[in-house]
Image (cartoon, rainbow over all chains, first blue to last red; front, side, top):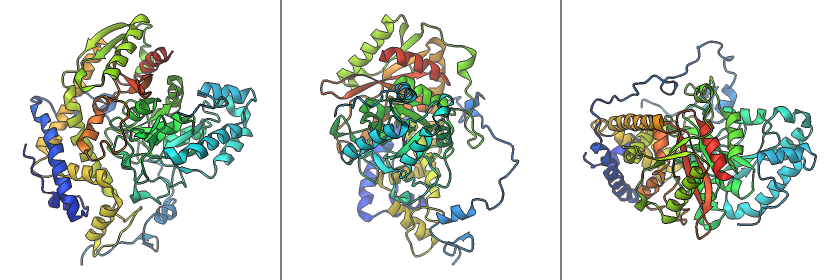
Length: 98
Length: 471
């Protein structure tokens, strides 16, 4: 595996502003960590699926029926109180399209 | 460590007896802990907040003493890790991002504790969003080890372990993703259980890595951990991954068990800890259990597998912290810049590191090499354990390679911090239950933990062996 990681690109994809002086440090740390992760390439995984083959409870979602919803807008007020900005019962954000 | 006051109970059972006999009221008990908190918390920094209604909670219980019999945790004072929601209280996850966030509902485990009569004293410190092994990643300062204030309490549930050991509560709830309950329990000298994946509802736990996270108890002894586990376990319609325990039930465990000693590289572990595990094994052998060495052939891939899958899940779970719905908001020049600035300012270095690593591992061109490969490794490790539990009932190993390290020793080396999970990550990769309990102390007086791992939903076996070991 190649351990070249473009910190600027990844930070942008992850929507995280990082300082210029943090970049070098992250770069070095990522290279060390990914170098260690490369150990995984040694494991023989031929014939192994991505997801568990056995359907035990651990690998099965325990979904409830989609019935009896709570009363609409029951929690709206409390939820909105935690939003940094809201107006007329809606969360307020900047324009998505300029 | 400061002397334990004789008035304080050492177990849930003892506390209940003292309350039942009228030697102690719930308010009196809570006041003892509050005194200790006042004396010690400024040094240890376990509690981030003491709830203003704690005396009220205690008085209410004192008025309902008749209900004690049906409430297994009646009057028992708890601390709660700061990533478990309590309605109306701040839940910060040790992060500036949620410094002022007030939970709008109770986690299922909180409902269950309250129904069982517990008193909730306050919320305790942790590594930011549960990422770390020392609480040094908390935005609110490190939690120090009550046995030696120059050392870490472990993490991420360091506040939970330290608060129990320093008698600032009788028990605590923490969460374990890769060792976050067991490692601090081992460092501080408490008992900590990471239950089977799916045994306890995570509804109301701030998510870190959803295919690993479990809530579990940290307490003074195995019986207390068992009592708390029995209160909090069970399927919950609010968590689709929670299931009814399967194991227990069909086949009760035999009196004499077959216990496997994990084959591991002894050179990587301190002599004192190797000897402690040997001593525990000897004790179990003398009690009549059959002992055999057991190998998990692919166990060395657990940590790399863990540190691919966890950051991947972290990058997805923490996408919700964007300054829109809750938490910190820092204004930028447009919507995307709002996200960038909010996340840049709100997250600490380790959280940023994991989000970016996860983003990388999931990005086009790298998915197959990292994420897919790690998923497959996880299945292989799971099969290794499955095979092992066909021949043994439980596996014994160290919990950690060393005793509690000095504050600052590993904070500049993320990879060294990740390797703290060497013995605790494998059970999480496989979704197995594991417990750490104190078994002796090092020459310098620091606690040493031994770890027991059992098959899925066989917490009962962990409790049985654990109780025999602590006798």
